[in-house]
Amino acid sequence: MFAPECLRLVAITDGLHSGTSELVDRAGAAVRGGATMIQLRLKDADARTLMEVSRRLLSVLPNTVPLVVNDRADVAIAAGAAGVHVGPDDLSPGAIRRIAPPGFIIGASVGTDHEVPAAGKADYVGVGPVFPTDSKLDAGDAIGTARFGELATRCGRPAVAIGGIDATNAALAIAAGAAGVAVIRAVFGATDPEDAARALRAAMEH
Image (cartoon, rainbow, N blue to C red; front, side, top):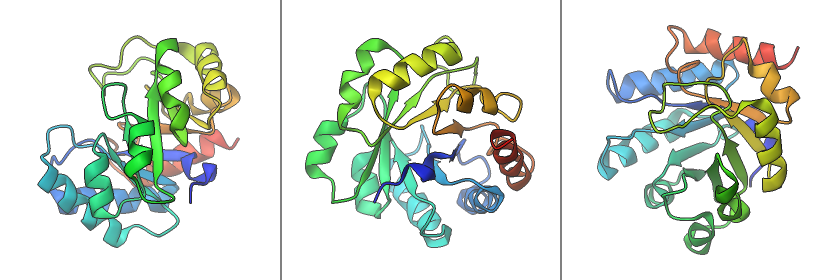
């Protein structure tokens, strides 16, 4: 069952640089630091690898921290993950909803006005990039916090701010109406993901 509280700090993986075990360990550290959702994003991985990593993550993550798989609803459903996060070029939330099991979480990326309608069947939206970022080469120009607020309101769904978020600006996203933030580099790219996640949570809650 989807609960907006799980969106407070979405930690997105940054690849299998040092193997599956290292990624799983870092995900566990992020959760200990306060991450409330893990999004498995492995852009260059095949379905078999995504399945393997998903199952490894599910074996260690607490039931209170959902695992969502980026782009691949089929892998997410087959692995027993909590949900999927899709972009404008992926299978639509409405199409996924027709084949997904009850309670399956669907997130959708939104960065422009024309992407808003497709997110209507999603449980939550990821809106951005709010700040400049080079973690996603196709992210586009930063939209800023005011525009984030506009798009989030139009979507009518709990909205996560994504793009260039770190401990120095996370509070600005929350003040603009974000239910939480989604980060790649600020947690999985940190030397100590546990400390990084803890710093982000503290920055949002002060």
